Length: 185
Image (cartoon, rainbow, N blue to C red; front, side, top):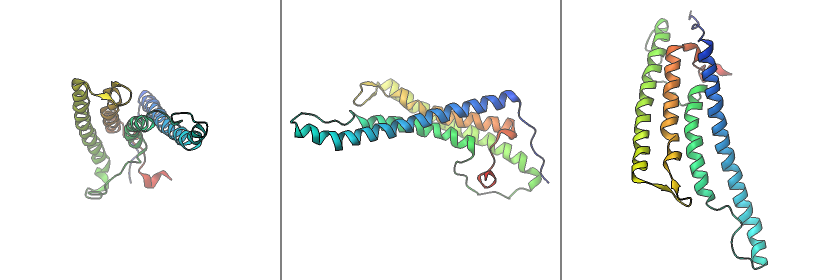
């Protein structure tokens, strides 16, 4: 018989809920942006460009640097998705080691696993920051826009840091942890 974890403080629940909403909003905006830009780009190139040619107008009706903008939006949306997947329990979960410890120790093992996962993601976030910092120091710029690339790359360590902090919340308050996928339906 397993005992349900004690409820998390209302403040922690509110922070996690707001945080999840913001990450979902950013991810949906990024992927929505990609969809709109690609549709407008393809429609412009395939529908309007032939009309331009028919009237001997120079140029293309596609969106300037559409593919580059979409790649940048993909980076932002994807790394927000790391936090969203962690919050919803929809990330990949290897089943190695499940059942090695008796069920009475499962809650303790879950907290240890959350702590270890949080530490792992802090390490990955640090490497992500090293990558961003190297871009800053090298003065790398986004192609076609002549702007620094590091603000877009910042999504990488922030996405991993989001997952890390969320795992620390799960370790502190197990009630915040999402149900495993097999129990969500």
